Image (tube, rainbow, N blue to C red; front, side, top):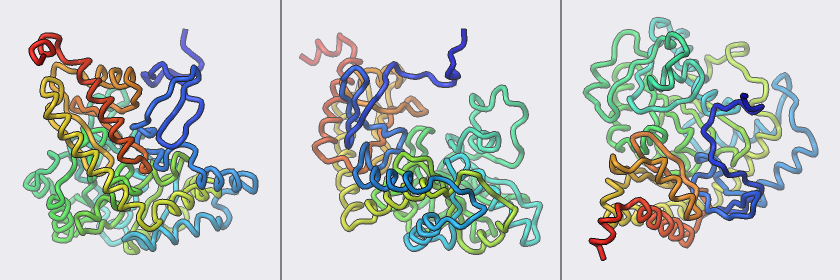
Length: 400
C-alpha cells in the first residue's frame, strides 16, 4: 500500500527535530554534524539567531500579500542584491528550478524582442543539473531523469563540460545563450576552470549570445566570494540563484542586467508566492550576515583548510578515494569504482556525519558557511573513519 507521503525519495531513516549551528539532533536523541546543509541550502546553519528573529517577527506581521501590491521587503532585498552584484534588476521566485526556468525565458525573450525570435536554443553541458521541471529536465539532459516523461522540451544542446572547441562547434543561427553551473554539484562536484568561464564570456560576446549562469548551488558565499563567477573576473548577462539565499527558507531569484531584464514586462512572467514578505525578510537576514565585514574571508579560510584535508584523505585512503575535487565549501571525494557513494554516505552517517551523494560516484559535502576549522577537522576525522570502514580487510592487515 502506498504511503500517504508520496514515495518519490529514497529517504534515510533519520528524522531531525532540532538543530544548532552545524549540528542537528534526531527525534531519538542522536547528534550529527551536518555537512549537507539541506543540499547547500542552510547557509547559516540551524537556528541562527538573526535569521530566526527576522522570520518570526515578519511572520507575526504579514507573510503573504501577492505581487498585486508593492512588497517593501522585496524592494529592499532587490536593491541590496543589485548593489552587490553585476545585476541591474532582480525577480524573486521560490526555487532553483523556477529561477532557471525564468532565466531561460529571459534569454529567449531578449532575442525575440531584439529581432531574432529564431534564437531560442541554449547550449548546456553534460553532467549538468538545472532542476526537475520539464524544461529543466531537458536542460539537464540526463536520460535517467528524462525517462517516462514524454518528448524532451526542445531547445537544449549538450556539449562536454570544459570543452571550448565543442562549445564553438555547437553555436549556430538558433543559439541564444550558454547556460552553465560554475561548479557542477549534482553532476559530480566538477568546477569549471576560471579560464573556461572567461572563454565562455568571450564567445558570447563574439557571437551575440547571452551568458546565463546557474549559481543556485554555488552562490551566496559558498565559493568564498558572494558569487562563484567573481573568481573568474567576469559578469554574466543573467544568473539564477536559490538555495542559500534564504538560509533554508524557500527563495529563488533571477538577477539580470538591464538589457535582459527590461524585456520581462508586466504579463510576461510571474509567480504567486515569489518575493513575499516572509521569504524576503529571510533573504535580507542572510545578506546581513554574509555581507558583514570578514564573513566571506572566513568562509574562504575554512574552505581552503577543508580542501587541504580532502587532498590528504585522498592520499591516505587510495583504496577508497580516487581524488578530491570541488571549490569553496562545495567539495567532493571521487570514489573508486568498487566503492559505492551510497555506501560511503551510510558509513559517514554511522560516524555521525551527514553528507550528500553526487553523480560520477562522488561523495559531496556542502556544509553551512558558518562552520569553524575545528568542525571541519571533526568532519575530516569522521570521513577518514568512514573510509576505513570501506577499506578491504586484507588491506587493513597489510597496513598494520
